[in-house]
Image 1 (spheres, rainbow, N blue to C red):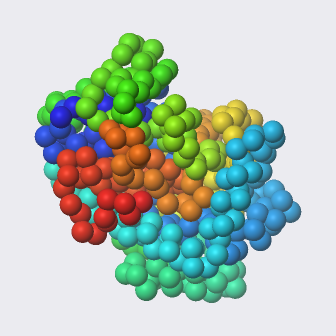
Image 2: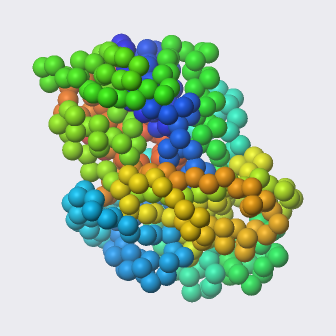
Amino acid sequence: MKVLIIGGGVIGITTAYFLVNAGVSVTLLEQNSAGGLEASAGNAGFVSPSDSFSWASPSALKLAIKSLIYPDMGIKFRPGLDPHIVPWVLKFLGQCRPGKWRQNTHIKFRLAQYSLTLMRELEQETVIQFDTIDKGIAYACRDQKALRGLERHFEFLSERGLELRTLDKDELFNLNPALKSRPDIYAGAVYSPTCKTGDSQKFSKALVQWCETKKNCQFEWNTKVQKINMNNGKISSVLTSKGEFKADTYVLCAGAYSGILSRQVGIKLPIYPIKGFSISAPITNPDMAPTTGFDDVQKMVAVSRLGGRLRIASSAVFNGFNLNHTPKDFKSILKLAREVFPGVADYNRAEYWSGLRPMTPSSTPIIGASRVKNLFLNTGHGHLGWTLACASGKLTADNIVGELNPKFPPDFF
């Protein structure tokens, strides 16, 4: 069997890995250079079942209104004249009911837990290095009221098996010594010790090299899909900037661009691109750099140590496919970095990034067979693509080769 994957971010590459492990011949097409430059390149670095909460929740509208009042918060609306935002928002609001929120969060959490297990197995098999740190993630609050509210919020995942601990101020500072320089900022944190951090782009590039040397896998970089050709209800070929590619089966893993490409074969995917920002600054004081993942819950800013760099990420901007950014977009990120981790990194030498998260109204990904006979989908992972990559890649491979997974039936997503 020959499989053609469209999209070479972390989702497409992990899909390729599990397919070639199943004995399938794989070709992957990516419009950017190796490892991808989209959401895989600049995310927060969290591999975190603890972040499985669906964005569509009963409190979503209140949070959106609050973000309009407080510009330092991570949510911003700049939809302009984008015609796709209205139907997406209407579907999103339909998912904000308590029952839907519980269902969607439960699905994401199950998938995230499975993905974390698969990632650790992959690490053992391939021995690839991607600046991973297995010391958990601390979700910090600036006052006791917020901390108590966060504890109640996390009860939903705790009841489903996520290990969690509440840290007082001293325990939080012992995990992250840099916080001691500003002891007045945080009241404590909820700590998820089984989560981890790592560089998804470094992971992707290393996994590509492993696949190329060990398995029957071909990667075509800087290859833009121009047209998907159909014949008798099936995809017959894909025309690209490097010519025509044919396969028996096709997998769409193009992230935020999946909805654009799927329209060529008559499929409307409910995916909206939500822009995020991050900076990566060289660490100058390793002894003071964070030893866990760190999340300022109230400011919606996440921090990870990725080797010799400090990654600080934030924002969910509704702005269509606009990838432009200005220094103003990074103001809140830099403000928090200098406030909370002063002297840890050289923020004047930071690299700036913006990218698009492929978000569905339910916050759950779209995985499985489509109504086009030989097309499978693996897309719509939103803010949790790095966390869910291994599980969604394995489930896609299982679906294609016909292997049953009792945990997740073929139509589960």
